[in-house]
Amino acid sequence: MKPNMIVDTRGLFCPMPVIKTSEALKKLDPGSVVEVISDDPAIELDMPAWCDSQGHIIKSVTKVSGVVKFLVQKREESSK
Image 1 (cartoon, rainbow, N blue to C red):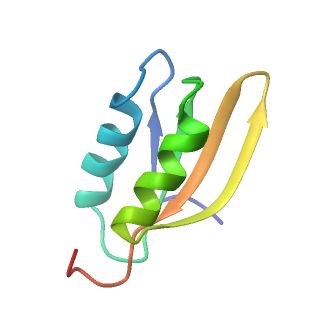
Image 2: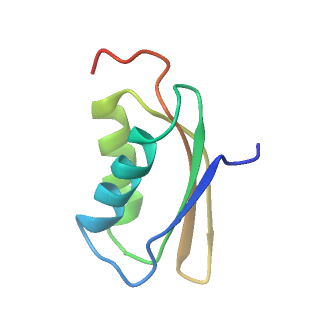
């Protein structure tokens, strides 16, 4: 799955990776995908919790050498 946008939040810590992801998704159409890159240790808990609360879908998660990459798909509806 190819992302529509990449959000590199390395060096930023909670809550900034989620805030930057939220700002990016607001600019995109429903169904679009953002790749989020983070080295924040809390991101593995924060991103799934935030996506669940907002209705976004995590399509994949990879972790290499302390860097986590999420593919997050924007929810299809705009009611939240």
